[in-house]
Image 1: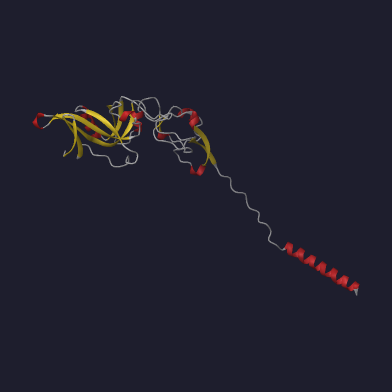
Image 2 (image 1 turned 30 degrees about the horizontal axis):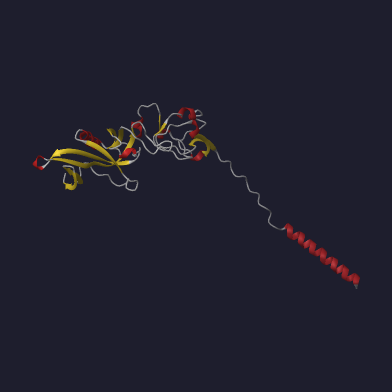
Length: 257
């Protein structure tokens, strides 16, 4: 009887082993994935770091970076087409800012040979016109390029009874400062630019207004807050509150133009 049990047990174990072997062989075979197709890339010239408006491009500002060939714009600078691009663009002036990692496009650069730069950075339809300033008329020197200002005309005229009256009025509102003397951007943490000339970005009719105003009295620039820099500008010669000074005493009068 012991022998019979042993035989039955051996048969059961053998059958279990055969079943396990068959079961393992009938499982799904692992799927072999095809290798991913190789992505075609080209080297594109990019800005290594942020490059602000007006900065002169240096070799360390630029670098080559691999870029998917299918997404490369014709305006991008490719290494296989212009291997000397870094040297060619060194010394150019940025007319529109670059952000770190942005592909370099020549339409945003102008050669820094000194001629034509201001014309290159002016938007279409705008004019650059300069006016004399001093620390007293230029917000104490705290006006920097790209700030927004109001232009105030102060003059004296004869009033009622032949009394001399001092009048101040905003003739141009919310205009952009392009440059202070020859400074076109804030550099090296500079916080104050004390200059003698401010160059403003104006429309043609505004340029005429400023030119006439320079012959009429003293011009001052009033610095606008960043909060309201995007508000619509005050039209030239619009209705404004005019500060009137009579015999050294200040008063406020509303004058209709």
